[in-house]
Amino acid sequence: MSSSNTLVVPQANAALDQLKYEVAQELGIAIPQDGYYGNMTSRDTGSIGGSITRRLVQIAEQSLAGQFK
Image 1 (spheres, one colour):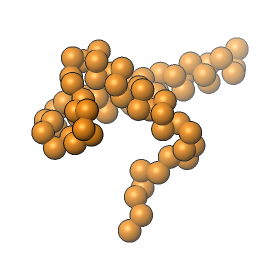
Image 2: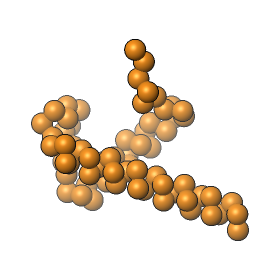
Image 3: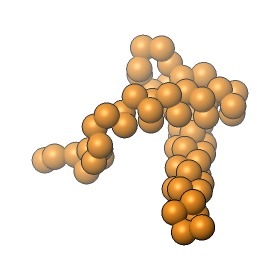
Image 4: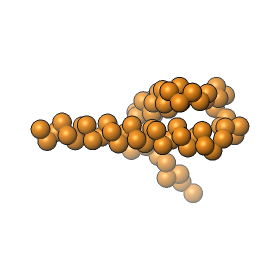
């Protein structure tokens, strides 16, 4: 079974990782350096994911608004 979480643009992986660390820092949540998220609470990981989604939507809206000026 293949994962549905494959990136359309694989080069975006580094930018998404950077965004994840920035959002976590803003929220005061420490991301495990070893990459194991099993000790993190669902609330923390959900907060990070939700904030990333909000920021990506905001970036997309700004990009679209710039196209139609």
